[in-house]
Image (cartoon, rainbow, N blue to C red; front, side, top):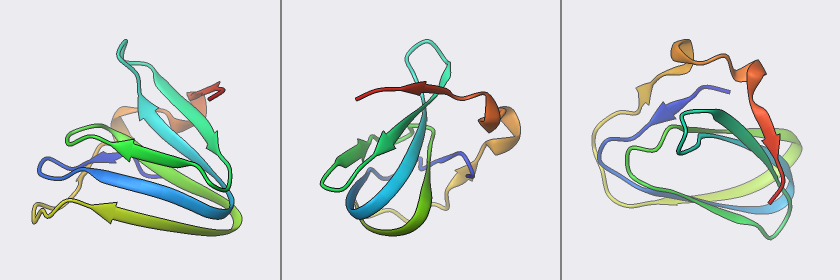
Length: 88
């Protein structure tokens, strides 16, 4: 899972089938992860550090606002294996 952010666009993910981990930085700067299940959607605001990691066979839709800047990779700044699991 590669942590990244988009300086110029927002994203929304919708999980149709399967499962996925959503990684994000909370308001205290801690790396968190939440398990997505079918029917769930997640909105990622512009500039929010995030990553999505599918678990097995997964069908997921992604929509974003227009934007042309490439994603800014920040996975080297965080230890993804230290993410704290949070329930919805």
